[in-house]
Image 1 (cartoon, rainbow, N blue to C red):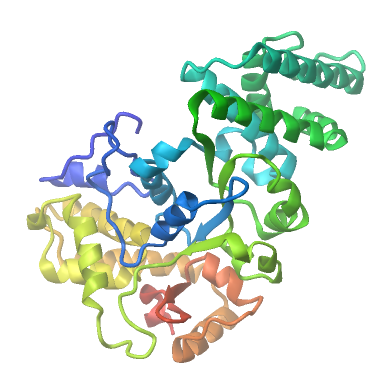
Image 2: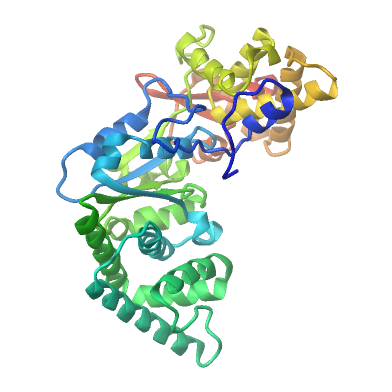
Length: 418
């Protein structure tokens, strides 16, 4: 969707496109906010922006998380469009899935990706690096190639020996992503000289700063996708190493880490993007108009109001539980049913159909003990440390909210199952 046009829909075909579930909203070419972007009440991205703009001794590191579908990628892209951020930082944003296999992610992969993207993005934008640094990079590349040849013992290398630095970094990223054998080789080499790789990253960052007079800022998306064990290994076991690069970094982090004992290792630099509050923990029967207005706007900027009945829109928002992607999913499913009915407007029956579809998906994966726990949480709404709660929160069977204190409740579409 690189050439996607953010146009308000007046008919269902266009509306179907506008409610694509994985559609991070890129800033406009002039740095203005995307026309589909919706600022949420009490947006934590403002806290992250303020922290990045504050004075510091070393470029800061932050750990950014939130539930699946709450808009993390969109918020990071929106951060890039902030004029004050652009004045202070030389920012790049990339997905770790572009650089390596996120199912088999390792802290060494992340560091190599940081160095590679810093180099490639700066060169891509026409940046010139000092000859001395290029010599140093060539020396480091030569050592890596030599060790790969030694490990392979004469076999053909997964990385092109003798390639230019640009080709080396580009090829290394591709091989790390697609070839497990090469991934293992590079990890072995990086492990023996982790300080050397960090020095390379820091020298590239320093060269960019000296040329641009702005601090490199790296926003790494999709690092919330690996499982809890891998997140622990990267951000708990190797926390100090991940803080070493001398540039500002925002790591996305699995929400599961926020519900584990290991959260303590990142808590001072962690920000969590909560769902939109549609009610309070104290009064679940009283809708919060600010939350409903926020999600009404989410729909209204994507499609004309004539395409959905007001009562159907209200029900769709209620069923979404305040999760942007869930609302997009419900509306998109309802659009499909309305089209099959040859209707030109979404009705409540279409929304109920969409909710039933989601509920049926959960029936396949929730057992009796899960349902028992969901019923208990629906009664007291307390967010407590519990190994059984963590997977339910990741599945969005439970949704977390924040008033003065954090609390959680059952996904609204599941209440009929309780």
